[in-house]
Image (cartoon, rainbow, N blue to C red; front, side, top):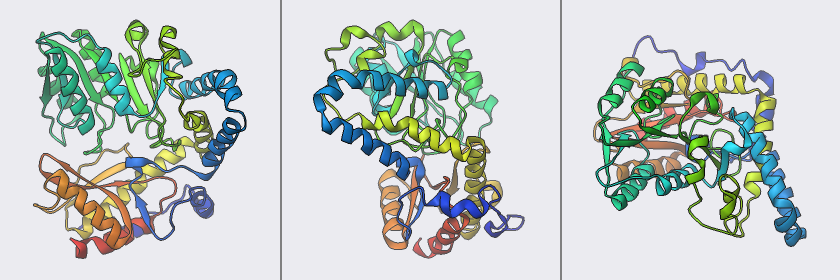
Length: 396
């Protein structure tokens, strides 16, 4: 496979001699190559310590914490996160994950019999299931738009818009797709769909931290993103952003005493839960800011692409056959035909890789094609991908 740069040619000039100290911020097993940040994230030790400090405060006096301190603490945390996402604190609510946010929006959205909910064939599986559930309950239907993996932005936009009909009420569009690791062109899609009187729900599970997000400029009706992925916040931390004209109709899936507060206050307390992950999330943002978000994003993209090149070379995949998004911290390598041909086979192969060669990496399936999805985060180094590339061919 001529013309492909070797990973040894990749030099991590961003961290340099400081990289070991950066790596030590994360309490990850040193005997494992962790190349699947995109699935569950990884929480740095200072953030875990911040969360534990909140837990100790909660347990020292639960009544004071829940009855007199929690609301103000959540408001402060939400305001800091909203600023990071380019909006204000009243525009976002905390939710456990993006999947919960999607179901929340669908449960409130005014679908009627015969209406259509539009998805692409890159949509996350749980999101598709949620759309089918709520659409069926309303007598509506889900329309899936096939979008070629290597389609350019203009082709993606034209393909999605061509599927809009007079009955299309809601489009659920990924910011960064999960199985196929590519951005969708929200800058063109969101205004074009809204011009056609189609509400837009953006599934941005991977976007916060990976990409610079400006919610007020984006202008989507609904947007949800996980903070426990690329922002490295504690798990169970995500936000739902709702445009002002829709907030009166949005309520959490679980009703509670705060129902009358509306959005976002009604989301603060839906029972007695450990919400310390939400309170510790700003500490994760501050930590990554200390590393430098621009530098971190460049490091992650460059390392993911370099790792993609080496693994592809090991599997004899030509560079021209590599799907690649130049701004995404996850990159795909196609697997040989018949390998990971469905979701069950992909999950089984992912487990084998983790157990047999001590590499945690995502194996995905999209339209019958298996892929290895390589993530890169601050704690990764070129040696992680070199190790994987050396061991994968024999395992396959």
